[in-house]
Image 1 (cartoon, rainbow, N blue to C red):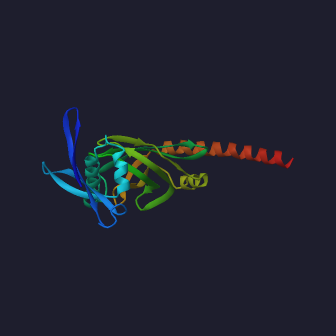
Image 2 (image 1 turned 60 degrees about the vertical axis):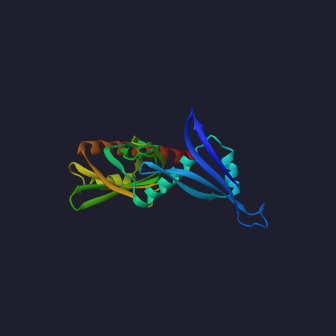
Image 3 (image 1 turned 180 degrees about the vertical axis):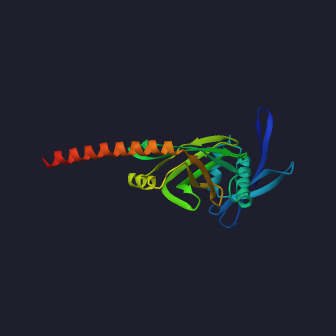
Length: 242
């Protein structure tokens, strides 16, 4: 059984496909059979036929959406997989524009102004991203500050996107590191991103200089805030004991 179907939109032919029903068991055709969908793929300026086989249940669901260009869906799926084979990491640029300090959700830390630029013609889906922050006051000396994790972000083709994650830092770590900082230092961020459709992680290092006066103001804020928190905790404890 063979049927050829042509889809039109606004009077223009979109794509043509042939649907063929094949029986894998001639004695029991009602129980075992499959469909083959023939769709067109653009190859070097011309279209060629490629046949795929799908289960009957999937074919029935496809029939429920006659407005969908299944040929295009298949082409994009194949194109995505080929890109995955040929390009293990996405073509994307990530920049660290600025590092700021402050409190978020009652916790001190760093705000990282990250900008993303998708250099590809297709949409990118960031599955998850890990950030690791270090301070480098002088060459050869490094202090680990903290880490953060971000989940599920979508970046449109050729589009830009800004993320401002907050990296929580323990107050004790802030005071300990402050003893080693005497001048403007480098804040380095290791960025590791996992994108859907790419088999390898995207890893890049970015760094910016942090003026020592900005850091000193942040340390003063932490000392003041944590002192007030300590007073509140002490007051609540005494109220409970009474």
